[in-house]
Image 1: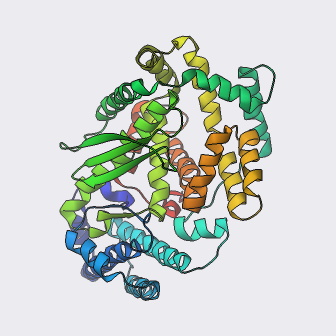
Image 2: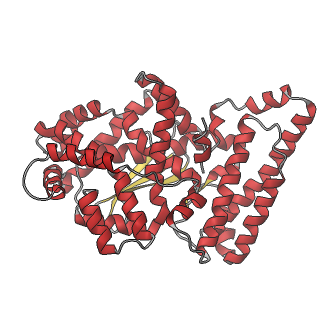
Length: 441
């Protein structure tokens, strides 16, 4: 349910473009928008229909209630849905995209990319077998980057220096990290303080929807650590999974990723901008789609935007450590260890890819996650449970993070200007492109 990259322009932009074009181009643009409106409605109905075969597929929907009810009542077979997807793509291909500019061009690209992903997901649900990379390229318009071995060795070497002692490095990491477990009766206070500060910092740079709000819940028995369920009306339900011990570093990470300036802000801004235009394709968010790569990339990179490392360490030491009843003396060392551990995300994703492609048994994958990605065993098992359920979706975090970071860094230049970084990032929050567009120079 992500929108074209030029969305930040004013609502009158399309009209002004058409007025400036030769009459033939203007007519083509009007005709293209009329066709795209029809394609968009077919797309939404198709996504809802696929959701009847895959309970994870529809991540958010806040369109007409009757469309959802119709999909639930009909529950069309996959073969019929495949035909519907092909028909919608033929209609999309029939659009004369010559001369389309700005908002209309971006809408055209977005719908085509999303429809191809729907078609691919239907084929998967029907039994089509693909390798991990084939699947991620088809569904997400991206592949998992590789981490060079020297880079992994350098990260592990730095962690060795930060965590000296006997025994395996993963054991030393787990022992160190266990010093920062937040008692269960203090998790809510720590989370709410982290969310409040992330919100305050985000509001200093972005005008949020007036009615925006969220409901915070705690759950168990899920394969994910946290989830944002967008409800429409700029409101979300944010759930935190307490199956495993909650570490202090998770507070700001989850507050930013799921809330501010992550998914909650991203979806609220899309809704505020797109609803008046009547572009219905943005009222549904299929989980397995190219837009998810940018959404997760925005949410992960947003952690660094809202809280640069030094400021994060200071806030954790002065506010969150005391709230959790923990000793803040090692806050700086803890922050550096967690930063380095975050960089091993590509390693863990690569191991999961090999496991899903059959190159590793489950036991072998767990051992590699433990020893090469420094994921304690219980969390490694949870990680593989996530990978088994969501498969190539796991690339959205690493591929998305790298894409968004590279895009923003390239436009910031050599000067680390926080104001400029927020400006560029805010554009992405309001107008997520598909991955292939973001990769363009």
